[in-house]
Image (cartoon, rainbow, N blue to C red; front, side, top):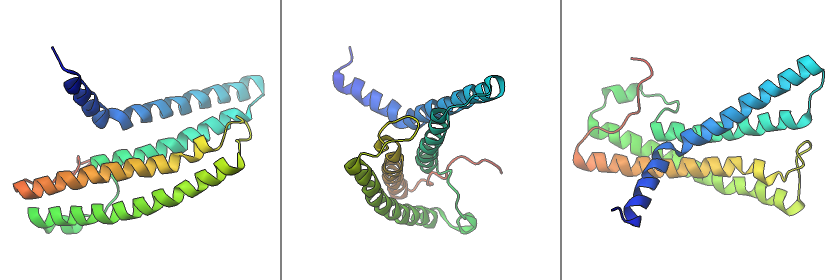
Length: 178
């Protein structure tokens, strides 16, 4: 029989591995379904709504920020890696660790400053035009995205340090083209 600690650990592993995928699927499905409904309404019924446009816009924004965190996790973000092809395993690990630290610093600063916009919106009670929902929910996409990026960068940093210490090659991400 499993203990609660093992069950919680397994749940956290599953979330760590798939949280962005599920969120991306949710927002992508929402975006596509809403766009399909709005195109049908516009072309067949000659009527469109403002809320449909807002849902698509904000779903796309969340999609982009969660996708950025997923790209960091998989090392799929854009980078210039010509030098890495000529570097040994230890130097390659050092480059990745340095890159993650710089990116973490930038993401942390952006995370802190992105909360200012959310707090101003919360202070003044701004709402979206069509949905009449607090803009805080939509503006939170940026800090949520940067928080996820920071989390994934920290995990990447720990993984790279472990690989460097063990003498194993660092994770370079899956190759799209070879």
